[in-house]
Image (cartoon, rainbow, N blue to C red):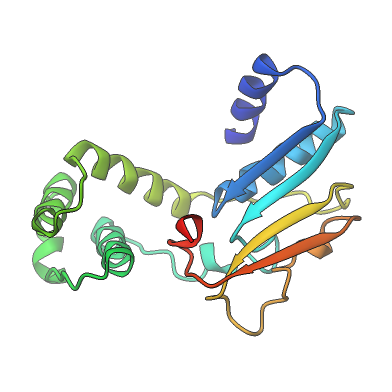
Amino acid sequence: EMALFNLHEMQAARPNGPYHLAGYSFGAYVAYEMVVKLTRQGESVAQLIIFDSPAPGPHAVFFEDSKPKIHADYVLEVLELINIHYDLSISLDEDSLQMLSAEQQLETCFQAVKPSGIDLTFQQFKGFFGVYMANHQAVYQPDLGEKIDVPILLFKSSEHEAEMPHDLGWGEITKQQVEVVDIESDHLSLLSS
């Protein structure tokens, strides 16, 4: 659905390719699906640019292995991401958090983060949280039957595990070259590196 919406908006602004599409994290799957749909329509796609995401399929385990089951788990994960990104050490009691409503959990987390000086409104925090939660609950099952005929440029953070292929599996789904640019960063700081 996201890919179809984005395609509609993109083609309204620019009806014909060649297109250069990019995606970061879960957005890489949306961009990939857009490439598949465009090429099936006979449109020209010049390049797919990926920012730190494994290819869909067997290498995409980081979205599937450890999905939290309750709202408080997502809140604590977002807090951990904030701690890592801003070099903080804010903690919340998991049991106390679980006793609160979903809205109260977000407010508690936001109030814990606010004194650190991060320039963020509660509405922005809720928006970020909503996107994070939706991305982790999304189920993406691509049709990997046919390789795309599009070159891929992959910007990859240094935090990926050694057993992952250097191209994070993107070479398995394209007929063309995958150029990998290694960046000394973690996933969250990749775009600011």
